[in-house]
Image 1 (cartoon, rainbow, N blue to C red):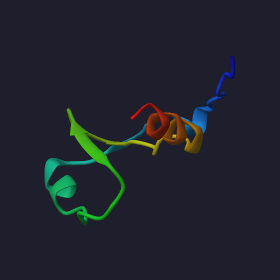
Image 2 (image 1 turned 60 degrees about the horizontal axis):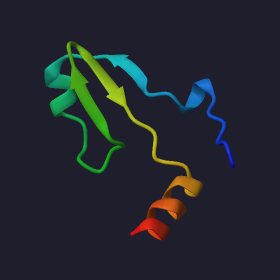
Image 3 (image 1 turned 120 degrees about the vertical axis):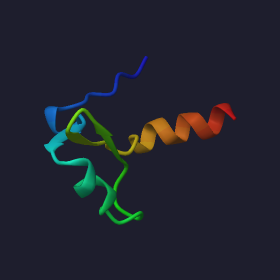
Image 4 (image 1 turned 135 degrees about the vertical axis):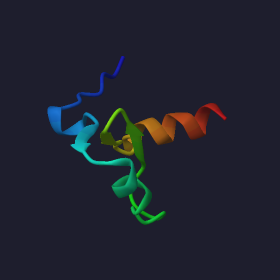
Length: 57
């Protein structure tokens, strides 16, 4: 069994911002979700994760 190690830098980043600032983000920016006054920037899946997902489809 292979385990994939994740580091602290791989966790979603939280940035304090207003909803107006969130709305001004360009659509092509990273995946960002606005929750209770914070922009949460999500990381893309690992390459290994994508390979497994493609294999399972």
